[in-house]
Length: 318
Image (cartoon, rainbow, N blue to C red; front, side, top):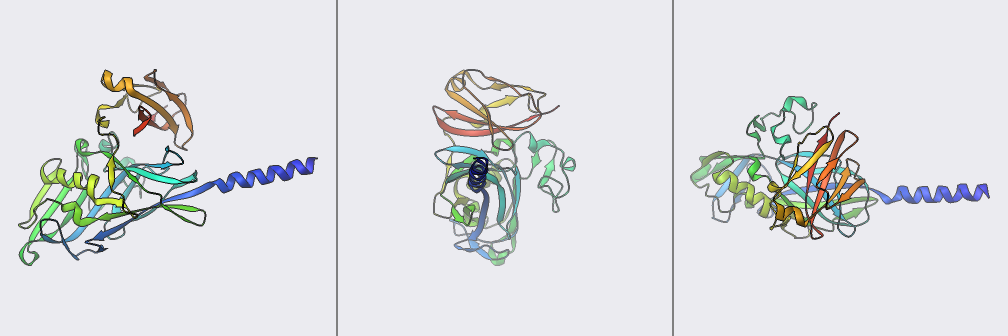
């Protein structure tokens, strides 16, 4: 009997291990349907020809949507994507069967956007970069840095350094991904001519900040640049709820966090709290105060009338 028990235990353990899968996020960069390359000629929807010689952008708060609408945050918080290389990064090892979509933000969310780059270890995406991706403590990180030449004979210079908390938004891309062995791969495409959609660069332009064409560039990233490899465009998380109006404070906190939002929004929301491993530790609706006994990083997924709205990260300190 003991031998049978050990045999069954071994089988069940192996089965559980096989349920775990490495999940990867892959983003291929394209320019007018061809593989992106620096100094290659692109054309936007206004007919402006341009060449890109610098392209970097941040991706934050990646959440995997899977298995009937479940939401699991990636183990890695931030990615700095280079134009020439694209992205092929492991999101973590999870008990996931079917990919249904991915949620992410372009840029760095508050409060991390106003953190000290030197506080991060060497090699971390938010550590000081060369060329710099940090604008300063008050303004925060450059969400997207895109530079190049345009105009007659490509003699004009354009520069977009797009940033600002007001321009940080989450969006969802529906995709089934693909399987490779025991790995699951979320395959996206970034069409870089769409970054300059409705932006006139024929005479060159320099726009650094959170307004004007820099803000328009970020809107394009959120709505038009990135889509799934199987053709699905990005969609807003929930057009009826502005995630900037849903605030958990204080954050960071020593254990107690409250929700700050208007009364109408509060009445419609349900919350699911997960730790850094993706384990659900709390689900609540009526209670808008959250108490954490252990320090660490937590993710609060927000639902409105059972529809997924977005996810906020909170940090609990000792």
